[in-house]
Image 1 (tube, rainbow, N blue to C red):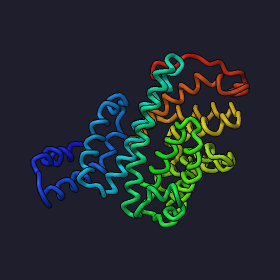
Image 2: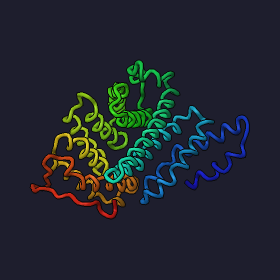
Image 3: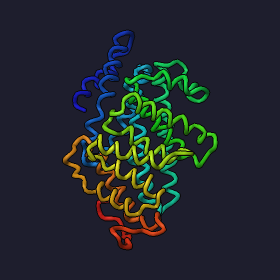
Length: 314
């Protein structure tokens, strides 16, 4: 963040005309490319405390630069990741002891996903007039016009929208948008199948298992592709497969194998993924502890699995 400080300190004293526009444009450019410092951190609680300030700073700048697609993409990504990494994970941690507090956290996370979706759709509308409305009324018009350079924005649109839908308590009006979300994910994959070293395939694992008529075989195929492209360096790939595919198939052995693989990752070996791996390894441990509630027959390595309390690092 050090390279941002001169810009952020200078911005308030520039107040009029083109000079202000240039300054806020520079801040927007800097902010939209500043995510790596968070991803490499090894202290999730520190990042959780720091991210809201960064997000609010970006929101202040986007008021002056409402068509800065890089900043809009970063806002969409930021609100999705903050809601999922911190609110959703804390809700998952405490739900057995305080269901009301967990539900309140999930409701708050959904507000973040809605905000992320607003920024993502705003970004798409910069390039495709009326995209936000057309994605509801005639999505194929927008989807067919998307280009490879828009893949990051398309990904975060689909991720945010999918999370909004997943928290909608089976609202039929929201569920009706799920096929569009799946089309967005598939379009991004068609445009740039290697983008993000497999994250598009990871998205499709979730969408295949969530969408009506989705295919567990296709989800398995996307999982294998994600592993190949990422080199198996992301714990989230294994955790998503365990939760979304293995539980549906009632494949307890595959579930435990995937979680063991997630926990075997050395978080310091892949510094760019360090924070995400720490967070998803915590989720893996919690899932291990709850496996008895997820399977009719909880089998690991050929024996009945006993579940216990979460470890001290959870």
